[in-house]
Length: 236
Ligand SMILES: Nc1ncnc2c1ncn2[C@@H]1O[C@H](C[S@+](CC[C@H]([NH3+])C(=O)[O-])CC(=O)[O-])[C@@H](O)[C@H]1O
Ligand SMILES: O=C(O)C(=O)Cc1ccccc1
Image 1 (cartoon, helix red, strand yellow):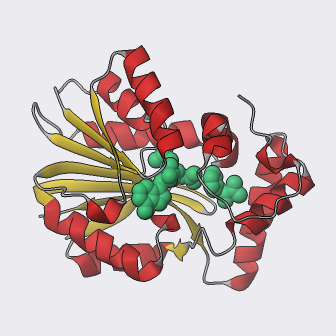
Image 2 (cartoon, helix red, strand yellow; image 1 turned 30 degrees about the horizontal axis):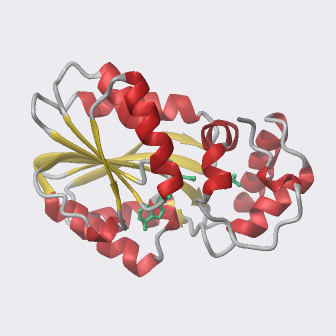
């Protein structure tokens, strides 16, 4: 279904409710530049590290697109676990996983409550940005502690620039992208307002610092388009 959520006047903050879930795949494809390419790269890099019986967790799995694609592209027989606290998203995830014949354990819970023990790969595309800063640092520490040695964490985030001029230019560039995807100026500004204080982006350097502070031995970006970045972090 086509995303028209922000065509009407909005009075509440952005939420992953039934209305958003019903158009979510279209929303993501039209709102995140190079979403499919970022997903393809996350999966290809992930597959380099995976072998049979490994545990893979997707934090903020939404409609399970990434886990379904991962299972199609990786040779290894994996234990796939998707976590999200939106039942509306998980309903769609269950239907899609069934339709594609992919076995995924889908858990409705807050990301902080999950035991990620023995994870080989933890994925989290465009989800940490919705976690409050102090909680975010805590979650990343938990991710680090749970990974096996040699395990990896791949995540994507909307980022900001610490240079205010460049930051403004990046926002302008992003709005041009959204216009090119068919969103009107009204929809763009409505969504920006709804996301205020809900989506809290860090700079690229802040993201890398958070990862290294948690204990990871290495972190770098494998993809970046203006203010959207994908990172890979490695636990020694
Ligand atoms: N505290 C939380 N606990 C559990 N889930 C949460 C929490 N906060 C947010 N979520 C969930 O995180 C997901 C973020 S969307 C991820 C896209 C996906 N990774 C994709 O590549 O298709 C990104 C976006 O919409 O920008 C939503 O489904 C929320 O319900
Ligand atoms: O659409 C936006 O304005 C964004 O900042 C990215 C985004 C995409 C999908 C859900 C939430 C935020």
